[in-house]
Image (tube, rainbow, N blue to C red; front, side, top):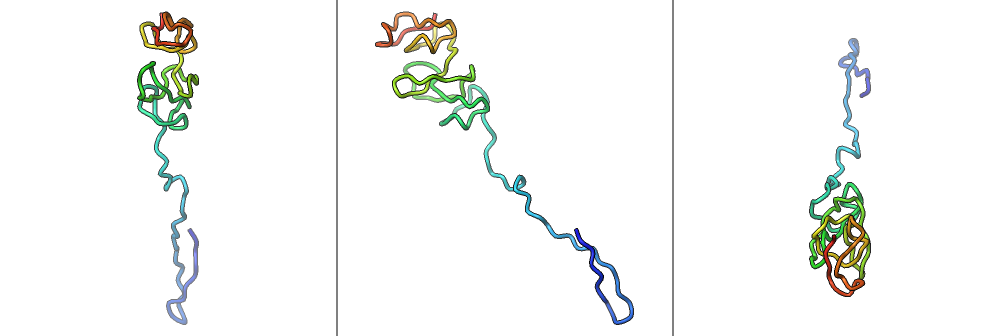
Length: 112
């Protein structure tokens, strides 16, 4: 906002207020909102908790991890803190710390 005196005639100048819009970067920010735990994602930076991974062994679906952490296994990110009964590859994936029947990561087991 600025003020400028503009002569209307040679005898009577008037004061005019001029409003000039200013670009506000936050008004034009098209960055999508971050996703909550359990929502579908494709990368860590899409999630509010910065953790995108497979919610269980045997799926290619990715979600923002409910535990807020993920772990790399065989070149894929898996959510950690998986509840009992969830298919898993390694102990690190399970909330209990035990992926029962996985034969040391050679086959899918279940979190106990």
